[in-house]
Image 1: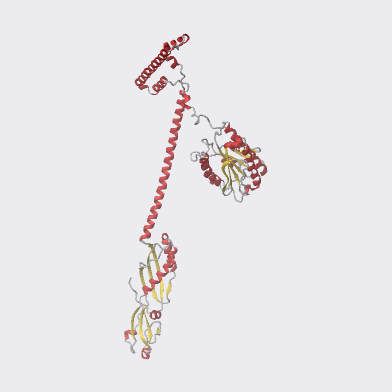
Image 2 (image 1 turned 45 degrees about the horizontal axis):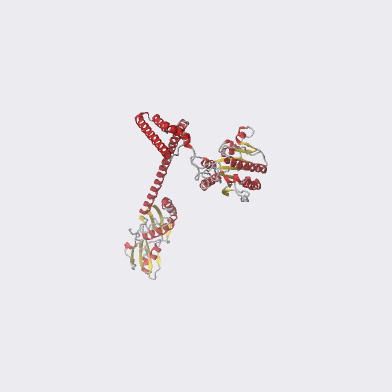
Length: 560
């Protein structure tokens, strides 16, 4: 870095200065110093007069440069740090400065004005730049330029009237930002590739499902076609020729070999019967009455016995295998039914909280009182408002069970959180229940809503994912019952089938809640008994005082 000397000349004062010493350069201010260290500027920096020379007051004469200086400097030794102190900004400064107090320059004996300015700027930039991240170099540059837009005075003797900064990134910061940008681009590329791969996988799955459906339909048609046909050895050969008409020679050879083996088996059987007869005759164990049957048996041969054997049919191949040990355990059940009772616990539905608690207890008591139904039913209870809470985890119903009471709600009804919690619970519950039974029925959801959801349309996205049987292996059937402010169209959107959506016509919330619980008891017990009886298509009749939501929407008087 070059220097800018501010004291361009210093010399002792004589009694009679030379003429050139009394001349003044406009870019220079003359400063005099007495022998006791006092500094004096005569007439704004003019040389002293002849009278002053004769008086002999001053001992030293200094010429101070007061001209404008323009320089471009870089802070290489101590560049300003970015936020965090790991990386630094490269800094280039275009500066302009001048001396405003020559006497102070002499008094401080300042030799290099540029060093003074650079030290000051380095200090200021080290205060400003740490507030900005390395990605914010432009903002840091603007902050520095704003700081010196009006100029400033350094130590009272230097005017810094111009300072324009240009901040950049050092090599380490540049490498870091390049790596970060490359990582972001890689992430975008991988996300796009993932979407392509996911779509490809879904398309392949759809094709596989189509192929599988075709295979199952073909096998079903073959099974139906084979029903009633005799599938002995000749029947199987005939079936083979139907599928492979070009393989006649091989089929004939197989038939001939089969016939040869059958004749050999008949002859061997006849020989054994003859040997038995001879043995009995030698032992005098054959009576006259026994001779005729034995004679007929030897004459007709074993072919008669073979012809009399019953043939199996194709339908017999699909008979289920017996349980290990030959019998079915006495305690076995036809399957387990996971049922989720989901209750609106928002502030809008708080009026019916007491009836909800009583009805829930009555449901548990009713199921526990029916031992057969209790064997196949598993219950869980969830409430929702601005968040969803599992009040009772999925478990068997037992006598004396008391669900924890539901408190009056304080937040709005958010259906999305209820459906998301169901998506969390159902798969884990299904895995646990499959340890108890090999036949798990599709989960059932009984939902009671007393208000309109406040998170439309977000809840619809969560609901679509919950009931999508392509994405959710255990997607439930949902029965939706609305009371109070719950709209028929909303209930129709929640129910998995139109006939499973019901809305109360009674304005009394307490009565509507009681009727819902009566329906819940009836539905759970009837469905449990239907499964026990082998009937999987039990008809669903809505709660008393409720009407199907589809009918209400079809009626102009009801609307939404």
